[in-house]
Length: 117
Length: 212
Image 1 (cartoon, each protein chain N blue to C red):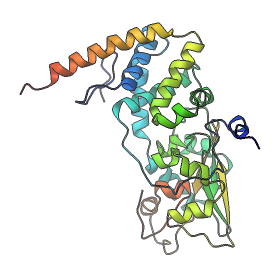
Image 2 (image 1 turned 90 degrees about the vertical axis):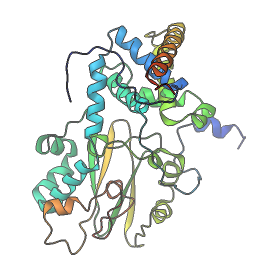
Image 3 (image 1 turned 30 degrees about the vertical axis):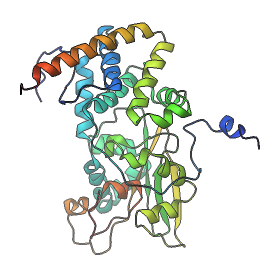
Image 4 (image 1 turned 135 degrees about the vertical axis):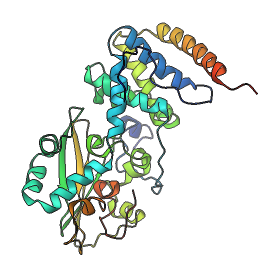
């Protein structure tokens, strides 16, 4: 078997049956944005904008390196953005500008709500 | 929770750290879709409430009822989703089927999603992180007994271990065996024995244990 054959036959999500470490029973309470991301996924599914399989596929399309490095909901939101670009729902520039605007807004909100020392 | 007219686009911001890149991306995607009227701000808020309303306590009620009511058990096994919707008023907010797998003296069931993180969310809430991570997903299908042992669960050799791999459309729930010595328990007392992990199949229901 060539060393690339396995990469062709197994996409990043297809890990069933591979050797892996012992199960560590880890869990965490979702952060507010993670829960919003989950709700967003469900709402996108209700409206048939992105269904569950498209989401899974979109995560896989991020490639092994990103799938390995991003956390669960980080993968989702990046996959959503890419899928929405591909479907022509959003444009990359539009998202970049909106992110800039939101970052400025959130930072401003944060500094205005932070108690002065 | 109040549902007053409130079209402020963000749902909640309750943190003190500066927002991260991915959080900003989430907010931006959501607000752009709301601006384009493709989704409603209220829909996100309502879905968060739905997510918050789902927990293993719902699944535990189903299991306890199935233990005390053979006719219900038969209906639950025949069509899990229908039994949840019609008899427990548990709505399925996605297009998934629910297949309930009954543990018996001869069969122990375990559920996994090797490709991602599919899980019977309408009846158990969101899956724990370990369910979504590589070790469980990779190994549950190839060496389930070794995985079960890591949860402290030893299944006798003469009991078949069946692993069911979930998909985007088909979700599974394990109906654990009713522990011995619970003949006098009420349905509520029985439900208290049914933990999340018993319905994933990584542990058995027990009168001693009340872990997740």
